[in-house]
Length: 395
Ligand code: AMP
Image (cartoon, rainbow, N blue to C red; front, side):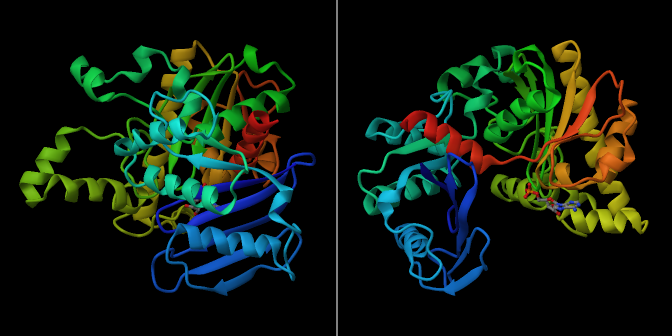
């Protein structure tokens, strides 16, 4: 079967068409600047040239129409008709505590996703626009919702509750949810496969280090803790997000700088992380690393703080699970940055095979043989994970 995977943001839409038998990518693309002047479609059939088409896309329905025309087009199309697309898998950011697994999309499911909108006001409404547009343009094609939060729903109460009045959990469901769940699930399961061990027997820590970064503890095949919280702001230091801070800083800065809560939240989400720590140098880890190697003090400070925060979480999760068999690095930074992996593992006292540590784009154990805890690089593939989940539900 061919499955279309859609990740719909407020003004952009990423898509991949995947063959579920070979698990190969058939085509991928991106609609940018939806509803904004200068919108365009970037489309790449597997093995073919990237095509960029400037085309007006006033809303998500028009964007999906352009995507479907590209997939069926005469020149670079990859399917003869839309009937060849067996199902659509939608990435949904927040499923609250309503969804512990992926689900076929029905009217009730759409209402339940809507009820989580206030937990992810930037993401969920956009995800729903993608679903509505597909329902309009591909009527009758089964659709599945795959949630970023679902994998983390197995966390025990003591891991997901905050130390604030319990009343706010009961009234508003204020608790840790965690994100990047599809990636944490995919990478932890793959870690067991690469090691040739049973997933259910292992204690695994997954470090999803990208522009957004999170870490999770997966014990016996189930997530027991994760670093992102009610929102993706908590936990690790990220590209532009602060991660953990003393909550009293919000009030302190509001008074000192005469800022509103919204302005402070904007600073914590968009001007903090390695961007803020490097005194505005860059939020991009490649830039930070290049400057780090050249001895730029701002970037040395930012990268060291980033690495230490990861180390603290690895320590906490190792204690929480009573040990760790494997630590897996994934996502843009985790997969591509030998320097950061070296900095983190140096703290942990784990020796790396430096030749393996420089490999890219493949599953690889980078710790030296005999290491008590193994360290791996496992490229994530959230789209493939969504396609697998979708297939399992529509079969
Ligand atoms: P993601 O959010 O997973 O797409 O990751 C994006 C981040 O990965 C960006 O900050 C990139 O700079 C970073 N990244 C990609 N390639 C490299 C690399 N070779 N070395 C360091 N960071 C990288």
